[in-house]
Amino acid sequence: MISFHNHTDYSNLRGADCILTVKQLVAESFKQGHTGVAITDHGLLSGIIKFRKEIKALQERGAEWLAKEPNNPDALRMANFTGALGYEAYIAKEGMDADTWQKGDKFRHLVLVAKNRKGLEQLNQLCTMAWRRQFKRAVVRIPNYFSDLEKVIGTESGNVICTTACLAGPLAHKVLEFAETKSEELKNSIISDINK
Image 1 (cartoon, rainbow, N blue to C red):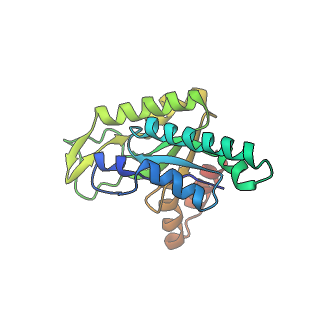
Image 2: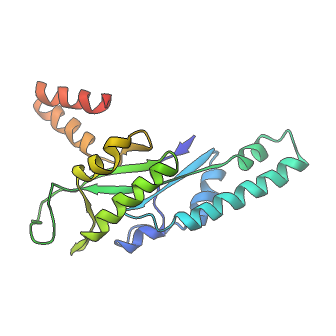
């Protein structure tokens, strides 16, 4: 089991949000019986170097343990513990910036996780785009647009895993709206999103 939506104290670069350190995230995930964990901080990839070091250190300890106890399942799990790299993106309406943002405008949350090196390059491009248009309204806003996803990932898809982050995600929002309206059009849109 791998948990794909996790924040660390690196998320605090955007706003006070999490007290869990990278080291604690990796250690606690292993302790809870996971086979891996993803780092998906709010709008940034800043913690991934420290995260990779913690994953590698855990794997090395596991390899040493496995050499001493070759039949120990926890040693095997530790030696093969996986670290996935990603971030939680904030999808805003196209063109939203400091001048056009209005109170009540929504940012839809998506967790994006790299499947491979190309996926990490794509996430780095997306994250950079968002930070270049950052603005502050109560908290730092770091918007990505759906057109960013299409531009960066569209022609080379298959390198990034996209999940709904929480109830603020675009798919969850549609599902909640469908629960109220029972709109056939909305239902078809949800099915289309799931089948993409």
